Amino acid sequence: MRDAWQGLTLLGYLVQRRLGRSLWLLGSPALAALATIGLAGLVLLGGDRTAYATWAPAGTPFGWGYNGNGAVGDGSMADRYTPVQVADLQGVSAIAAGFYHSLALRSDGTVWAWGWNGQCNLGDGTTANRGAPVQATGISGATAVAGGYYHSLALKADGTVWAWGGNSSGQLGDGTTASRCTPVQVSGLAGVAAIAAGDYHSLALKSDGTVWAWGNNSNGQLGDGTTTNRSAPVQVASLTAVTAISGGGSHSLAVKSDGTAWAWGRNLDGQLGDGTTTNRSTPIQVSGLSGVTSLDGGSGHSLALKSDGTVWAWGENPDGQLGDGSSFWSSTPVQVKGPGGVGYLTQVSAIAAGVNHSLAVKTDGTAWAWGDNSLHGALGDGTTTDRHTPAQVSALNGATAIAGGNAHSLALKADPLAIQPAPANTEYNDLWSVEEQGEVNTFSGAFSYTYAHTDLAISGRGPSPVFSRSYASNDDRVGPLGPGWTHSYAT
Image (tube, rainbow, N blue to C red; front, top):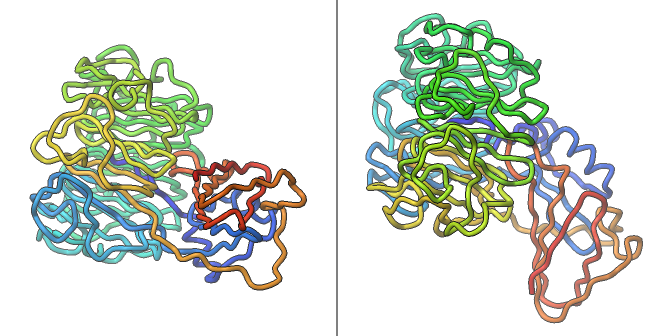
């Protein structure tokens, strides 16, 4: 629900800042170098001779579901049952959903927020609800955002964490329990690589693979072996080599570099996935899961995305939020089924958990949702019918990231770019090469190609970029791609 890794395009932001211009990639070595450092924000526009790479604003956010406080962000307070564009906000590289508010990170490092603001959780210095985005005061150089129940977090490029909003349990981490209407720095944290927020607690992953937590600890969700609230960060016990984190309602989740999943905190509904309903004040391994790349937590359920593109869920399930076709809770992971209960959901690139609903983005850019849809349309399928297996979010293609709040949802959609032709007489190289790679493919009539590169996928931070090009006839011939690339065509 509040996983800040979703949609993160930090490296693209850094490339934009450092290079400030377009790049020519005339061969796979250059591409591999960029992929190695994690260039999620690079957009490659394919032609039949060369690849032209240019930095562009990452995307445009869309919202749907409960909008009584403006959390959908379209300038109204009317519920939306299908996606609508967030007003006046583009160039967004990451999104996050709090309980009744929403957050976006722009590629220029500024943070924007909208929705309920009664605890100053929008960070604009007021307590006025906002139906459209306003800029959080005093934050620049941000690289990630996360939203809790009444508080918000931002990670800056210098590795520091900043927080604002409600602070009754110390969830802002500044050593007090005083609410803050503008961002304050979390005490004593440096070298942070990722952030996440639960309802009333906060989490940070440091670059050394350790996890730190602060705020409410009544169920052990801080993982320090106690149930004592903390107004400044404490280290989660016995947890190292972590690559991704997430906060649920009153529980916490982490992925280790070996692909195992770990959980701690409240477990009344089996949301820790260890086969029990016993709360845990230190991390315990989720049963039977391997190859995990990302996790997210709802109020009483949890989700995991595996490297094979499948989704697994555990915890409470009265509204179908586990997606297994039933209403029965499970204290161990079950695989999310396919639409209509046929097969299983596959080719997933990103996941998110709302309070009682679940969301996924597939590699083809479609968004899917299941669970609680009553009254407000949080699933975005145009109805208010709960779904116990995934249903496609209506009229949303090109999605790259997803986020879930209490009864609203957000998606980030890639901004369209006009194809820029290569300069005359530029030789194509081994990105793809008809002569050198051989096996020229020809088609009759119009057709389109879709390209993807495995090395450009960043674990837990969104899908491998997918690039498309349409052709009017077989006059444009496309040969096989270089190592690591895959392609498909449709006539």
